Length: 78
Image (cartoon, rainbow, N blue to C red; front, side, top):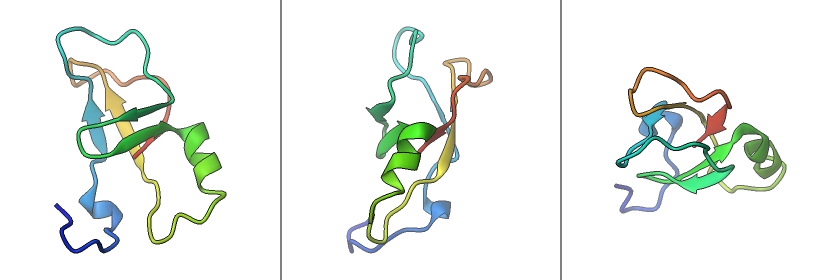
């Protein structure tokens, strides 16, 4: 938890995430709320990076299916 409101480095964020819930998602949206923050499709991250994000940023994250082995085909960022 970031109680002090300071920018955190990429080492503080997940590099791999997986689908939860009771059933396998058929599709992943371009933007969604993950357990600890927003996840965006790489193309959306490219758009975000064109703007001043302050000390924040985006970092790549691998999204896995519920089996925690099979990756979704698109590239995402956290």
